[in-house]
Length: 332
Image (tube, rainbow, N blue to C red; front, side):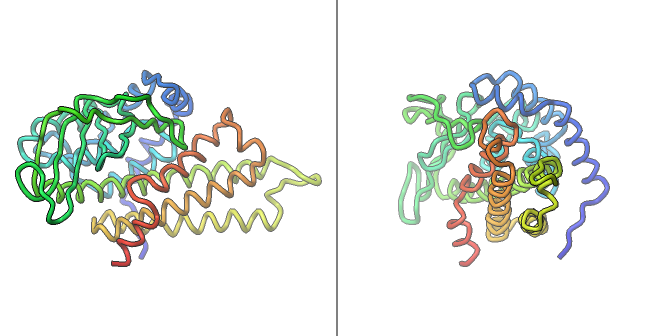
């Protein structure tokens, strides 16, 4: 199937691209990696003002959604520009906080960008806990296990992050933090937590897939431009047949992922979204390997902007579900 965006969706993508191009995101990413969130927070506000986070929030709570297709459009652009911060986690938080009382309390802030959320699932590290303003922990119990108040799990508002240092990941801009395990406000418990956690996971995987597709597209664009400039034996390396084949393979993989992404956004079936995530993330990762090989030694240097997308492609590959976990869901 061929999915085409309508005029409004394309205009939305173009406006985000223009906004992020003018924002000098590589500089913001490097500052964020060093723990300075000033530029990143300013960029976050501009993204929120463009309506990105409101796409995951219902109209009843000052959002415009939920609009998963438009959210996918937005996250492709966020991936193209390697925007830092817990973007996916904020979308997941909006999907977690669906109970009317919690929604009224938290969702307007998420939609407006005043609130930055991070989420830790089942004791895992949370992304950018040092930058987030709300910290959610989810413990999803297996069938038959019981939490406080019934079968299911617990959703808590942690008091903050720590103890322990901030950890860096493969992507320096993805800073991992433990959340406080003691205390915190119990927001929900029981089987409903397990259901909302599964719902949030689907939204997170959709946003991750879109982000990965955008990362892959930028890696391809930058590599195509580079091989036209780099010469060997007196000619651009882009004229070599083997280089053309590698870039064509990357292009085909990314273009194959695109309809899966938007098809999954239309259905929001967990298996469809898992298929989109594994396809987009694997395509981005393969494109990153091609980009690194064709750039040569300069591709390894952290000072070269390409590295911001190379490391992100690797990190997104396992974020919110490994390729194996997503394939298992597809094959069920």
